[in-house]
Length: 275
Image 1 (cartoon, rainbow, N blue to C red):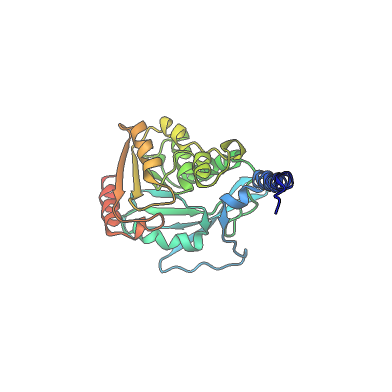
Image 2: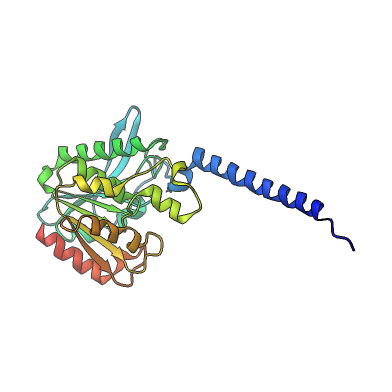
């Protein structure tokens, strides 16, 4: 049987062309709708009633015209040493994140959890990076109406570490805590999928923000975090600012399991006792 190489070649070129078009369309879709990939919120009805085993105050913080963010403030039963402003990860909402409150209130700190736009009972949704920074600053400004700035600790987990780093860079909290931080968001996303960094509209360059931070920085990262890998992220940040950052590896912890470990509990207790 005679093989028609020209016909096979034409078919192969058509297949390659179709694949190229699909990839191109995928890039366009990602560029236009990338917030849907980066943010994974759990939305709650505005009438949703929170329920926790300890008292809390529900707050709405105005961040833009007709946009407010929903927040929960948990207070320690002891004499408060201040407040921890908690920027959470990219999934869920504060009806889940608030379950972590006892870790901090038992160490004599109040803690404020805030849902980003589109999360929980918060309004709107993000369409550009500058809105993230606007909201982070407005939240911090609100906290300063309730607490002295010298008594504020900023804490970020995963996605929230970029917001926390920005907030600490532009203000003067007494401590910055980063859990599973990334070097830069666009670089992290590009490492997860074959996507050019130039198509990612959200840079969130933690490594740049940390240069401006004046307070001590404590980093916790799980040794088995295969999502935001410590070698490519927190360890690089530590190497960049060795005199600013104290890096603690939480042995055996994955990305979401840091706070569940005894090591983290003990390390956090010792840290908050010092501040």
